[in-house]
Image (cartoon, rainbow, N blue to C red; front, side):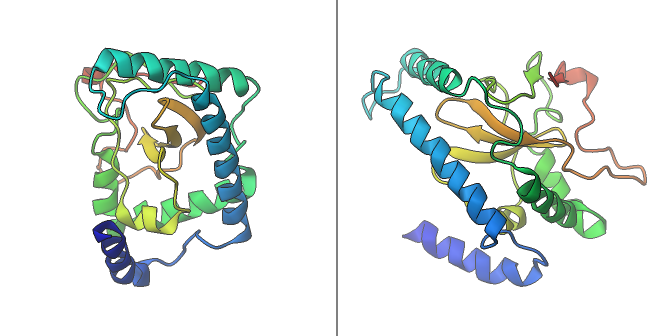
Length: 212
């Protein structure tokens, strides 16, 4: 109940400052329908994977089930491709909203948030992350923060799916299977005027974002 109240309060405070939202358009509804279809597939696969006790804390056992769930989803989505969920019309709307929130001087604070936990900005990153549909997101890789203004403007995701930034790209991440469900490339605007561009990989991280 507290989380619902907090979200309502955030909405009342932040929405007046948002010029564009994508919560009730026809494209948003179609996107949400595709998300629902993906979750139904995830649920079907999960039913065939040995369950874990709700109190299970053994990382090895959790990893085994996560891997089994990922394998099942990969098999069921063998023909998955970019744009299956982020179809062109909704992709354009996502891009417009994210660009608006992150561009210019007013976007400085949200851009800083995007860099927080972003694997392309963090020290000690993993060797590589493959930016491709149906590929695993490494367990040890950090996960970016997403500005509240962006979250309030985009279609709300059900439990188990997350918006995350990977360099300058937006990914739709299945947190139950650690799979990249879909992605949008280069949604974060490049910054000029001496500021480091979000998504430019630091040599110290050893991270490479690989596009298939």
